[in-house]
Image (cartoon, rainbow, N blue to C red; front, side):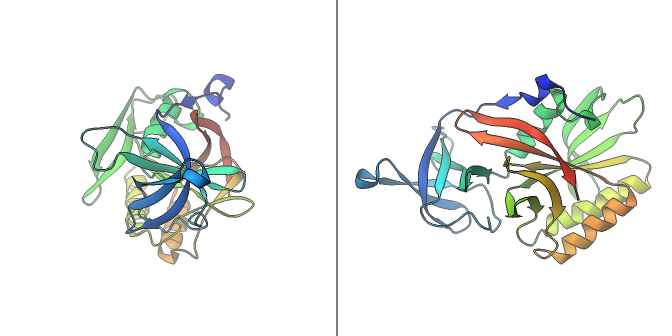
Length: 246
């Protein structure tokens, strides 16, 4: 199944995007970014919405795409969105996929998840968990539990990998989705790859062997894995393509 040409043109704009240079990421959720010309550079502090290691992207001087949030309720005015690796922006905002994927489904960009009459976010299930999306009302599929994962890492040309660190919560999700399949439901993991220089996806088993085992067990039990990529620019996030799941 492939997305329609209209769906493949899906663009999600993010206002206030600017380009600077990363100075340092620290205390997990803070990033200092240089703005302006080198001889007149100023440094701003941005929220880094990613608690992982962000492997391969944190060298000082790396181009950084950040948003001017300009909200009275935000603790920091700026938010780090993406970092440059070679010729490609890699999105590091782990909150972005939960906004992108529902829009992609609604636009028909993920045809495997079309045909549902209702898709609800954040529905309780499992053991003290909430599923990212619960899709119901399909003519051919039972109620479908959809978990969304953010992916930015590529260590091998063309290959996207998740996770980049220990991912205990994601491991728990894999086992809970197995239970949903056993109960007669459909379970799907959608990996949102925030970069467009890849065409394949696999689990990074060396980064978290426990997750790797859970991921393999989930696939063997019938949990479906779908991976899609997005191209990032100052215009926003544009749906790119479906990836091969290795």
